[in-house]
Image (tube, rainbow, N blue to C red):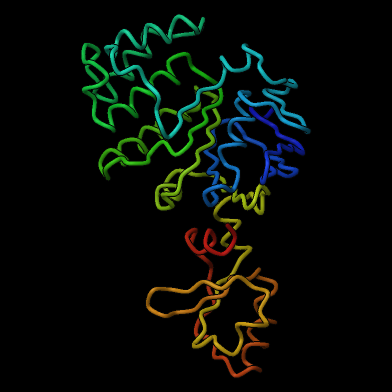
Length: 289
């Protein structure tokens, strides 16, 4: 099956920052989580994938077809929700949705109504009166009612309360990537427990470069966490990421095939290894991002 989106060797430079040689494939029916620290390049990558900023080098194929910056037909097949949720506060919900609908030939009024009911939005309410969670719901409706094949979500859950987040995650699994939709989702989020709940694949980006792209299960099999009793004597020599806990605990992240040798080296240096196990996503993020 042809992937929804294929990014190959993408480069994008700004003063002081470069997105370097990024390759990424998004498949139908999957949620891919894009993780990284602030400034790592997540939003730049999403905007290149959306076609709102030009790339310097590389290729972007959407449903098997090479796409160029600014193509209207491409953007009409992509839904985008940003953290800021820019909306027109003076409009009513129904006015805003009619305004958006006029720009998309594939707008589905019946589906729009279903989404209004799903997110419990009153179409007659003014946007300025909506809670933060309702504004997120409205932004999602505006990005979904024309049935895009690719959905790009940039920190969509920022500021949502736990109940609203749970509703959003349930919707993401039940509707956004339902088999009949044939859709792919790329979501950027710092809320790692929510990522674990919905993501099929994990992408971690650091300083503009993708450092890993795999399923969470594959990452858990590939990496190991070593918990050690002390660390002061070993701090200067280790090339492995060190994760320090608030309780004073110290953990090292290494690849599975390196763990046996690292245990032996630590033991030889008089450092007791307390535990060797698969990492959590939180530990992977701390060690790799």
